[in-house]
Amino acid sequence: WSETLVKSLSHNKLLYNTLSGKQTVTTFPTSYLGSQLAMVAKMIDSRAERGSDADMFFLSTGGWDTHSDVLDNMDRLFTDVDNSFKAFADEMKAKGVWDSVTVIETSDFARTL
Image (cartoon, rainbow, N blue to C red; front, side, top):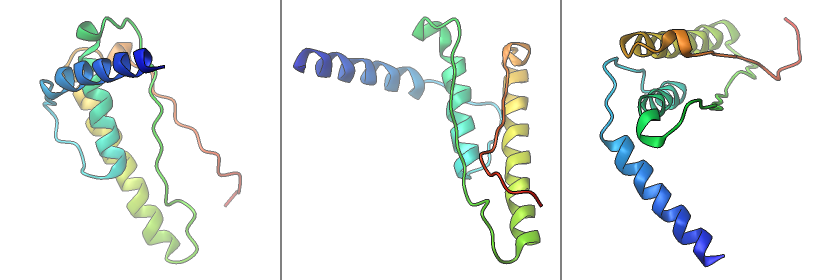
C-alpha cells in the first residue's frame, strides 16, 4: 500500500509541475465551470508531456434547481455556460486541437418546463 501511495504522490507532483508551466491564451470566466474548463484546456495542452493520446474529462456544475427568480437565474446560468464553453472552444482553436475535441453535455434533471 505504501508503495502505491509514494508512486501516486510522485505522479501528482509530476502533474503539478507539468500543469504549472501551461498557460491559456484565452481568458476564461472565473466561475466554477470556467475554472474547470481552463484546467481541462491545460490538461489537453499537456498531453505530449503526459504521454496521452486521448483523454476523457468529467465536469459538473450546479445551481439549476431554481424555485424563485427563475428567469434571472436561468439567464445567469446559461450566460456562464455560454461564456465558459466559448472560452474553451476559442482556446482549443488557438491551440490547433479543436477538430480533435468532442464535447458532450448532458443533464440529469428530469423535469420538463
